[in-house]
Image (cartoon, rainbow, N blue to C red; front, side, top):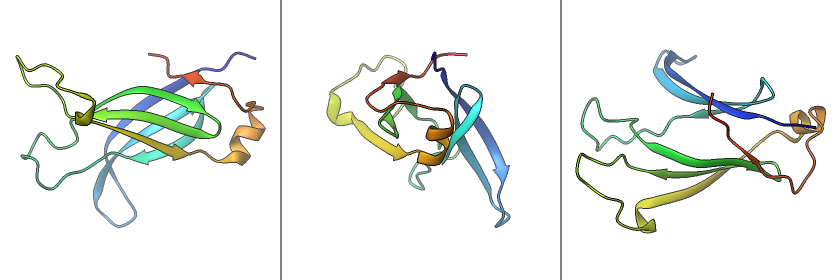
Length: 112
């Protein structure tokens, strides 16, 4: 079976607590498998918070893996891998079983 992993950014959605939050929504074959709150850092300048580069996104063995880094300013170059964070988040096994996703299958995010 052919699997297609996509991501959608939901900007400034009001939550149950009345505060506005941004989310990353992950879909596998148009079925939502993960809703992740976008990173927020209180130390960043207003208007630049939430501006992160998220790359190398893939689904493997029931987890979503990401590489996060701060965006580059004009003229800057990538310094080293210490500037990156490698993170992963679990996905519901129940949803993956419904979609019949086998273990040890790496599904890379596709651009829409």
